[in-house]
Length: 382
Image (tube, rainbow, N blue to C red):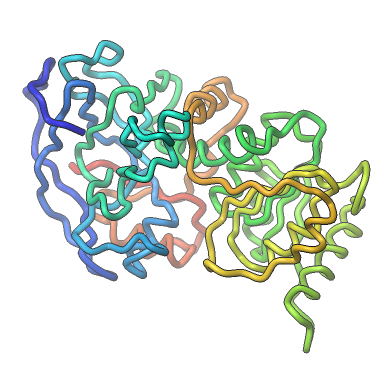
């Protein structure tokens, strides 16, 4: 985001308190400069921010794979807000507009961006992801106007913040898997992203939506939210090899839910949103011939997979990474039209000054009230 003289400067712009990660379990509230606004940018006052699993992972480990926190980094990337300043060339936004932030800025000129795959840009600057040190757990964040997506007045700012993880579900279920009415969809992992994948599948007309998880409470929530069926795999038996355990659990799932291993009644689309090796194996055993498997969850970088069983079905394997062209507009449309209700997902709310408590509660999976956390939402700085 380049600097430039800007138009429509708002005299009410204040300081920029930010929640900054300096190292593992080492966070501080500090004043950061108000972001510079380029000619095609908007400055957005953040109104709501959801905590993502990746935020917690950086807080707990200081890295995710090759993304290592080497410099102090502001956390947060699931946010909504209102425009308080626009660049001189911006014609689509004005002060006061309500927006959902698509928090990744690509270079826009490389071969990947030119192919319409800007979300895979090698020079992506994504909020709260090294080496970029900016994040949305602050008062202000600047974005190019075309990725500050308008949301209608009928949508709350909490809904707007959840458009980011919903776009992940839209990308995997709609854009990549192309789920169609009448299909059977199985989602492994009933965390926030898995639940939103189920919601998208339901909105697209899937006839059955199966949630698989080892957590009973999450399965109960999934059933109340979007799943038509749930399944809890049994633990490995004594002396059982990992792939043998996964194959056995898959057969138990098929039998318990009256599915077919192949042909009509088989699982057309599998969305793997847990990243767990056992779930990856089960998903590969489960998907029907010529079906679609989409890998969304990120767990161990190396897993053992039953490639023979999978390859013999000529199933399609697709990896899914964040979201791309058209995913945010569809996500906003699904919510604004009432086809997806995001409100049940927000189970806990925190003040900005209590961000550390919000992160710890999300890590533990429960708030101080003893209730399980699906999504924690943080208010803006006072």
